[in-house]
Length: 250
Image 1 (tube, rainbow, N blue to C red):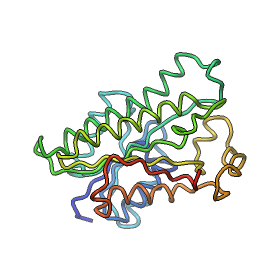
Image 2 (image 1 turned 90 degrees about the vertical axis):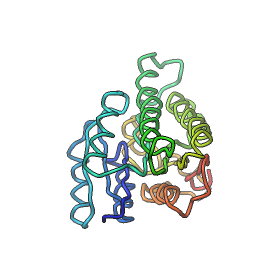
Image 3 (image 1 turned 30 degrees about the vertical axis):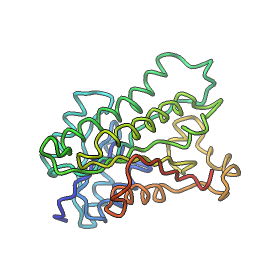
């Protein structure tokens, strides 16, 4: 496990983040799992990785706080070494609602985590990875959503809009740092069986909507994680600024 590969995964305690943590550990990464509140879930993923012979730590941080993000990156590098990969996975949504019923406070909460959090983490990763700054390069994968294409009407227009911002950041940042040894891509998961749907008030949402998916099923977190790991890997060495849909064809 002394490969020199170090990955930081925000929101890594559950769902797609946890699946990515497990898979990246098997691929030889030393893993930093960021979590906001659920320390028990984060430590459980760390324990799984350690039991399998991997290297992992859990670090609490609110990615919408600049101070927390700086501490997160410093702690990861102090304990694991130079970060070579970032997965911007942390994201929230709130109860299903029409836009006309949404409060400003709700917009601000969603954009603080989903947009500002991803921007801050991408900034810190670039500062450390860039060849211009003495880094050795690296790879960033942002977790967007198929909602950025569909808009999530009557449910999560604010969430969809926040993921549209992630798509734009991915394209712009990829061009900005392409000659600095950093690749930046995004995955856009579709209807995936994770706990985020319960956070929006409908735990069974995937089953309700799976008839809209050409493959006629929801996806599993591991299927998204495999796409993330591929984009991070040297197998995708000539790919940057790409938005990869993991949506079952939707």
